[in-house]
Image 1: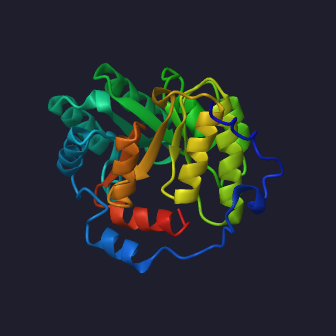
Image 2: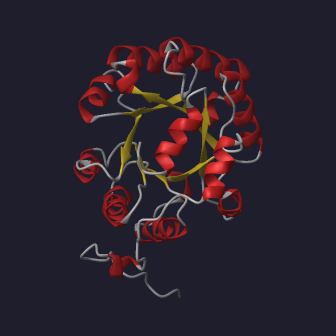
Length: 264
């Protein structure tokens, strides 16, 4: 008989979770890889679909993270991406992230409806009020919750029975908030998606899933395209569900660097 797993830690201090959590800069090699295009599918929606299809063949699910150029019509760009995903017949293995602040709640709702007709899931990212407005008519959409947000834990509690993508941040406060939110989501009845590539947070996520008797199909990891790819393959080989977040679009490199440096 396996020994019982320990109960959830209390106090939410660095010592409880085993990491010193210093704030560090993103390694220069990671920034170099972003600038070289190794962490971005390419500037167009065609690039996003091509990379997504390759990843699906490798056993991954995909989160499409398109970032149009600032002057580009974002609604049209996302509409084209939805059409191309449908034409490639990969919708069932993909999820499209919609930036509600840029699109507006009305446009986001229309795009979510078009995606739903193809069997393409959507994730809504942005401030709480516009995201909740965009959820009208799409109650099954994923809500993206950055752990560094002040309302992250309350939002996770409110949506623990639905679908949440929890994303990690940088530094001690974000790491500790991430674990608090993780505990809430894993104890809930929803299907959480846990977005982190930090090995310690990945390990804690697996332990929390085991403690809460989570089956592999009741939650998933979300990890960045081109970063820690060996870790992604190991997790898939071990039976975990891994969704790879694939940035694309002319604005993707700058947006990705802002995110990696904690300035998003």
